[in-house]
Amino acid sequence: MIRDLRITDSTLRDGSHAMRHRFTEQQVRDVVRALDGAGVEVIEVSHGDGLGGSSFNYGFSAVDEIELIRAAVQEAAAAKTGGAGRVPRPPEPVAGGRELCPRVPGRREADRRGPLRAGRGRGELTH
Image 1 (cartoon, rainbow, N blue to C red):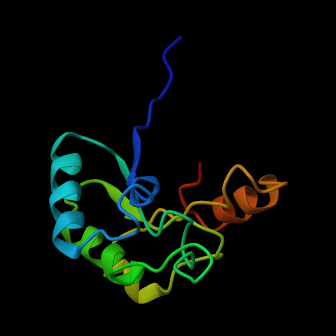
Image 2 (cartoon, one colour):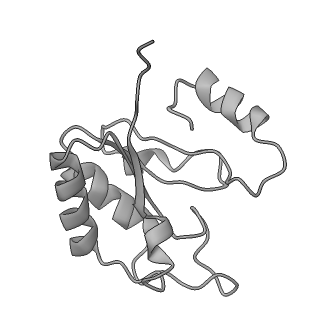
């Protein structure tokens, strides 16, 4: 049986914890360029605790996550890029004319079925 395989990288989301949420725009551009060149199909970009995670409780991002997503969208030639988090959708200007890949709430959320169905209904890539 042949099954489709989609490679998703979360270095620029989960990896921001190790960086204390201090990724720069240039670092995001460099990582996205390398991942995109390697054929990674989906690249998640946001604060380590998701879109809207930059806060007193979780730590403030050095660069606004919307700016980092915008840089990732501009840099990716083929990969789908976007934020991951608890907000229903990132603001439209982030897309820069390209498809975003919003992610539903994280595994720690009690019920992911509703957000998954809603995202698929809007034609978004969900996982």
